[in-house]
Length: 184
Picture 1 (cartoon, rainbow, N blue to C red):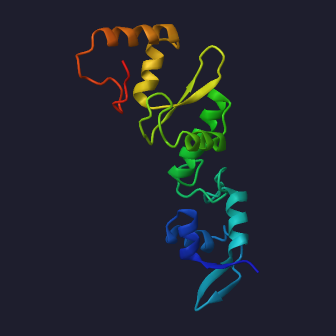
Picture 2: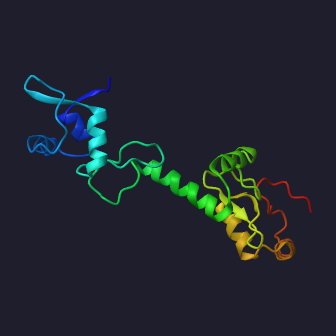
Picture 3: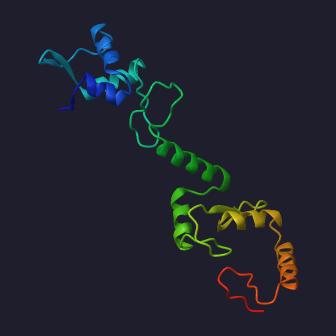
């Protein structure tokens, strides 16, 4: 048997005010109540959920990610929460732009131990680095390294030339690498 719910619980689950649900019941817009408990109607949740989805009187759209009901009155709302929305948007962007899936991204992050593939800096926000010509994903970079790669237009020759320039103009005793392991 399905879960038994009252007007207050229905209102909470569907993102409505209790008086709105009560008026829907009074006007016979809702399915017939299962029974009266202490003078108040109760329903089987399955029946109410199906009715809400079918009639569009109350929001009954399901989140495409987790299948929970989308709360609130916004007819354009698609997801049940910002977390589902963010994850779904990330999933779509990764697939559309890089043909990369979330589990592969997580595996790359784990393999790199949450560090930038270029400089080794630990970062929560690593960007997907890819070759703009072939679309091949090379690794995950911190924001600074990702910008640096874009500024040299994916050219190793230009990057080495900039490195050589920096080495020529270095102040004695100044380390250029983040971990101080430069060998000149």
